[in-house]
Image (cartoon, rainbow, N blue to C red):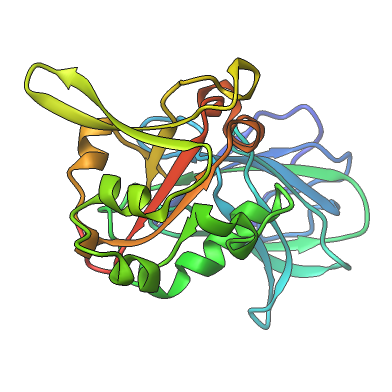
Length: 270
């Protein structure tokens, strides 16, 4: 794949197993993937391969030929990322999102100037993908770093597996969060349909801080309904992170303005 293009030519779709990469070559001397692209900065979006919707909080890494991470970023509320390599060379772009199969781009040969945009489509994977247990805290740390946090800096709002196992009679998500006793965080049931209860986590610190809106709930990075969140058992959950309305809005936009509950399942869970 060595075809060169002049400025103004249309974008090109490149099909790679497990990843669909759309390449918009912007630099004046840009060429297609797998050749010299004359671009130092990489910008783009990570989207759901099936729906085309943005994948928020995906971790995007630029890997050198030795497999080491040269640069990384976490996608924002509309799936955007920006990467700047440390030097010229050959790199591979890798994207990982909770609830999706990881994907990699073809080899990129980057020089010292210009901009290239690469949009990567991730293929949804069954919730509880293999290996999620060992990577939860590392992925959570990468996600929270964009907000100036880490799992430990969340204090009581970070609930890991040992804490879950130490919870007296933990039945499900609601019980785990309630037993944690997080100041300013309320856990209640909300009727989503006749005879159906759902999980509602809210921050009661005044309307300016989210009021009593129910927090957005994501399971392995994928939004789920309150009743689905309430149906999870303690044995299925690996970790929970609760973001304030301020952090939720910064990371996920207006939809996270009531706060965000991030739930990760154990390896092999549903």
